[in-house]
Image (tube, rainbow, N blue to C red; front, side):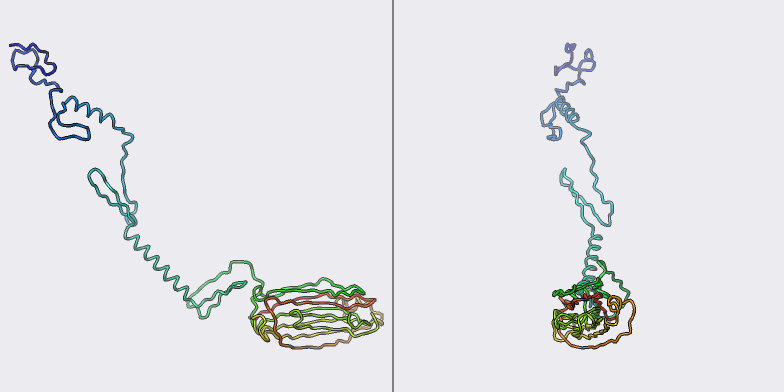
Length: 343
């Protein structure tokens, strides 16, 4: 019996050597091959699907793959001493664990311990920071090793001339108002005042005699009148007598706490020089403060010492002039305040 089929589809073909189908028994249509295995979820194949359908699903799956979207992820540690990488896989999910290594954790712990030790050491050092201007360190025991300290900030004015006014100050003839040079400061905060320091005050005046008892004086006042060092020119024949007066005060600091009892002792010196204008000398030429030639005059000096209580936090020092006649102008030139600190 000859095969009359073209061997298409699933038509039956009898095994016969006279067939014209060129081995029809081996040519089975893909639709005739049925899959009976387990479910293949990645390509959506289930039991009962024919081979042709399965091949189509495989082809579609391959076409759906985007090569550009497929990236290879590699998790690694550049420094195994500091970072560790481990992974766990559950099914199709891989989890990577990136952790700080025990070696690095031990180093951090060691640094923290060292910082704690350094901080404790610094706190226990016998060094006090004094909060004034300027700040300084007080070290109460010898330093065993070499330490270096640097001060960053404005250069403090702790010593030397703290105030000077050398302008020519005059009280016009027949004027009833006194003229004053004055300086007020907080010697504790501004200059670091301490026991043993000395505040030196100097003043130079020229005062004529007067027929008016109350208008011929020069004065340096400390602490707003706590101590007044005054010179009153004698009553004379108007402007015929002129006196050159020099003041020199030394304020010794006994205790730098303001307003404590007897926290200062003041030593004052007054030197006066007299000349009679009736001798024909020009007072602006002969007498201090404008004395260009030292005349042969008779000086008179006296001194005083006194304990007192001063407010170092607001200490005012004045140089005032209140002497005048009908002919000669009173005059003051030098007024300076110098702070001398003990070494």
